[in-house]
Amino acid sequence: MENTFKNIDEYILLFPIEVQEKLLELRQAIQSQVSDLEEYIGYQMPAFRYKGKPLVYFAGYKKHIGFYPGAEGISNFETDFKERKYTYSKGAVQFPISGDLPLDLVNKIIQFKVEEIEQKKS
Image 1 (cartoon, one colour):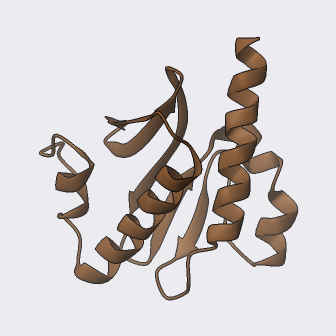
Image 2: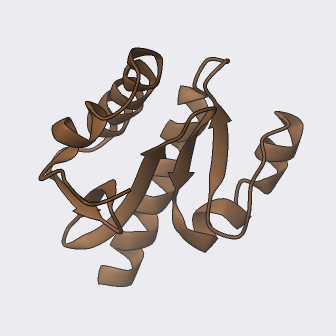
């Protein structure tokens, strides 16, 4: 996909409405967890920074939403991904478009990532 978007809103508009709804829901869930987040486009995906450090990335696909909390964010929640039967790799997890987003799990991952950044800062 060519980088023809300047911000997250433009990125989301590239997708069918069903995918747009999931992307907006995920974006809102992330924003509601932490104040002072900076939105940006990184690696041609919507992303958030917390205190100047990358927090998470996400991306839309035909059949899933990719969520990228980094290697630590994945390894720490592997059990949850296995229990819920999500496809995941070293740095990403896939949430199927056909199901509800696991906002409870997303919230836990965001809190973990915020704490990780806070600990590295101190």
